[in-house]
Every structure is written in C-alpha cells, then in structure tokens.
Amino acid sequence: MRRDIDEALKGWPYDPELDEVEAREIRARDGRTVVQLRIDLGLLQMELDDRPDGARPRGFATYLDYLRHRSRIRRRRRNDPVDSGPSGWTMSPEHCSEADRELVQFYHRRVAMLSLQHYDRALRDADHSLALMDFIADFGPTAEYVDRHERLRGGILFDRTQAAAAMALERTSPEEAIDAIRDGIGRLERHSQDHLDADDPGRLEFLAEPEQPETSAIAYVERLRRLEKEVRHHFEVPKTLREQLDEAVEHEDYERAARLRDQINSRAGG
Image 1: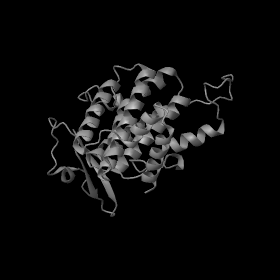
Image 2: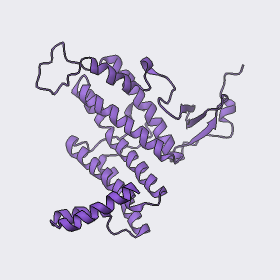
Image 3: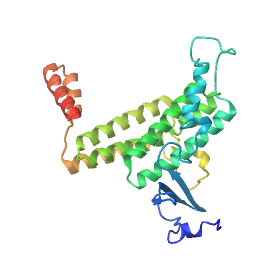
Image 4: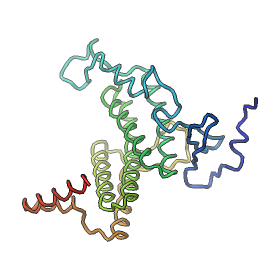
C-alpha cells in the first residue's frame, strides 16, 4: 500500500507568494467529508466537527470538555478569597501542553473555514478557542502562561467578527452585520485596554510560521472600522436599529427606545 501523499498534492501546488489560506473539502474513502489545508510541506486534514484530529481526549469531544470536567472535581479559582492550599486546582504541565495543541488545531480549522466561506463553522471554532482561553485565564498555572495566551485573543476575536458579519450579509442583513462588527470592535478595544498589548501578534506564536505578519489589537480594530464603513456605504445604512436605540437611551427618550426595542425583538424573532 502506498504511504506517500503525492496523489493528494497533485494539481494543488503550494505558493508561498499567495497571501491567502488555501483550503478545500474532499470526500474521504469512507464517505465522510473532511477539510484539507495546504501548507509548505504537504497538507493538514481535519474533521468538520468536534476535534479537528478526530480524537476524543479521555473520552470527551474536546480537551476543553475534559478540562472542565477535571476542574469540577476540585473547583476553586485562583482569584477567590481563599488560600491556595491543596484544595485549589490549576492546570498541570500536561494540561497546558494539550490545551495548546487544541488551540493550534482549532486555529488551523478556523482559518480553513473562513477561506471556504463556512462562516458558521469558523464562528463555532472561534468561540471554542475563546472558551478555552477563558478557562486558561481562570486555571492557568502562572501569570506568564495566561498572559502569553491572552496575546492571542485579538486575532481570534477578529476572525470571529469577520465570520459573524459575513453570516449576516449572507442573510442579507446588513444592519446585523454592522452590529456584529461594532460588537467585535468593542470586545477588541476592551481587550486592548485590559492588556495593553500593542505588540500583540494575534496569532499562535507556537505555530512556527515566521511569515505570519504581526498584528496588534489596534490594527484589527482599524481593519474592522474600514469594513464597517464599506458595509454602511454599500447597503446605505446610516444607523442601525441598535445604534438608534443607544442614542434614544442616551437622550432619555424612553418611548422611542421602547419602540426601537420592540422592532429589534420583532426582527430577531422573525
């Protein structure tokens, strides 16, 4: 049986000058659909759901699920007003290593899904990575370990915002797209203020991809503001309902705020 991947790479050359992710969906021999990501020395093949590598860590769908289960055995957050004695729980070196591995896997699949315009799956994977980072923030063994991962949050928030906005535009809902972009900008700005990470690389530094340009949270915000401006101009949306609601509340026009809130709820329910 042949063990090389020459056939899989035939007709799919790697172009280092191409400034975009190269991904594709294929049908595996057993009939399931998988996604492949072209990289310098070959390709990565990933499952569409749960863990990209198809594994079930300790019997759980993802390693985050296992960590949540493990932490519940002796749940006590480090910032609680209690001692840090033996009843406390933090991530072990093995937990840290496996959490990092899962972050890398979900990063690869997220960028592949964005490239393939599967925005719902890209958003799902971004949310998983953010949840894993929240867990690390609560239970990471050292401040250095936590801070190193917080530097990645900007890139994940940016990808999530792109996916959410694109999903709204696919539904022909430019107002929802603008609101999604504004939400993403707000989260990025809060993150930047909290961590003052002007040199945030925004990508997984342990991917060993030196060609990946460094991007700060501030730069992500600027890119999203440009996207917001383009959507407003193209769809002629001066102010969304949510923006009008915020304005009405600010001016204490509560009757107008109530009407706008009803319109927003009606749109969400419809």
